[in-house]
Amino acid sequence: MQLLRGRHYRDDLGIHFGAIRKPRLGNTQLIKQAADRGWILDGGEPAGTYPPEWDNAYAKGRNIDFSQQAARDWYAEQMAPFYAQGASFWWNDEGETDYFTNHWWNTAEVQALASVDASKRFYSLNRAWTPGMARLGAAAWTGDIMATWEDLQTTPGMMLNWIVSGAPYVACDIGGFGGNTTSFLLSRWMQVGAFMPQMRIHSVINAIPHWPWRFGPNAAHAIKKQPPPPPCGAAAGRPLPAGLPGAGLAVLQPAELHEARQVAAGAVVARIQREMHKLGQAYEDEIRVCLREAEEAQLQQQAAEAELRAFEGELRALRATGLQELREGPTPHDACRRPTAHEAAACSPRGLPRAAHEAGPPSQGALGSATAAPERAAPSARQEEPPALRPPGGPRPPPGLELAEPAASAAPPPPPPPLRGFQDMGPAPKGAPLLPQEME
Image (tube, rainbow, N blue to C red; front, side, top):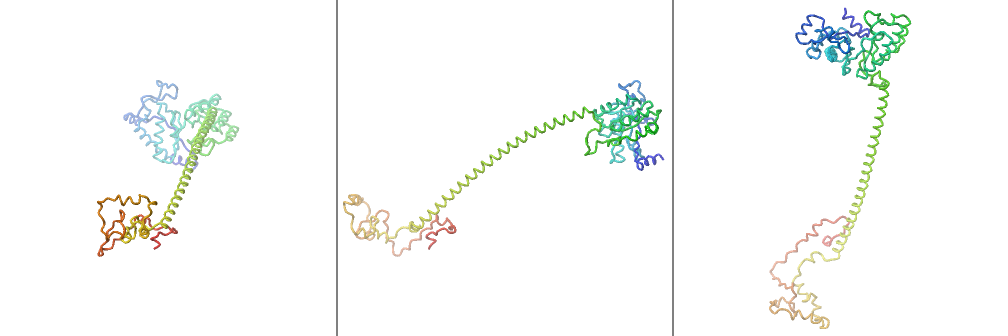
């Protein structure tokens, strides 16, 4: 019946039930089992006093040492069925048995939820709290306070101290825990509670329950008109949704902290602007250097192109001059072949045509003794050419023309070797004048 009721509240009515737990054992058999395994702390529960009164602590020898992994595994196995029966979160009361008791206690409860449904987020409400528990989904409340106007006045400041200490999801006992409250006090406390990170009502068992209808129609009407709690209420356990003002920050913040954040944000923005200005100047200087280098490279390219055009003009001029000389001068064959015997016989001793030689030597006055000196100074030991090889009626040929008459049966002289210089030039460009041999 209890199992069906718990699921009905959660699944059909949307009411999430939280089970209150203590960090200790009450069953004699379980206490003995835990003690035999070394899972029991030495001290007791100091009841939340500060400094802790260990001498007057109660529940000694019954508190679980959750810092041991084996103890957490066993505890998670015992808690897992309650999730299946309809429990949505845990209300972890007390837990001041050790500084880190609630941290490891919540770790075991997270493990229990993951074994049932890993897709659900964990939430718990704790009286003892240490920094770092918020990342587990653990929230805290301010503890036992009295139903007085003085406690209502001091509670917001106390909650702000919790928030700046690292516990953003903090609650209090609205209306006061100890003693009976009044309709006016409860109404005002509910109005303040609408702006708290978690809106939660609680009281001692012998006080009038803080249901609005228990304090008359006026109180019920005033409480009913209160605005809804903030988006991250008691069962949220998460920051504001993305897109809302102040997303990622605590719902309740001290005014000094808000102003300090604004000042710090302004300083950060100013520093970022200065850095961006410096970077902009550096980028502008670098861009100017790159532009100057690009201009220099462009000028160098233009100079190289002009030099190349001048070289091409000189090359065309040299080519035109060489072709003109080839057209006007003798052919390479005529310039390189040796004269035949008939051509040598047709020449005078001084290289003149024979007609000019037979006309007689030049006068003494014109040539002087310089023309006759070579004949008188010729050495007597020079071997005379055969008469048949000398030109008729004249002396021997000059040096370089002493050619013997080839025999009648001798083979004709071989053709001259090809001129590699002109043949290796390749075909002339289109439109260029032809060489003499190309004309033939």
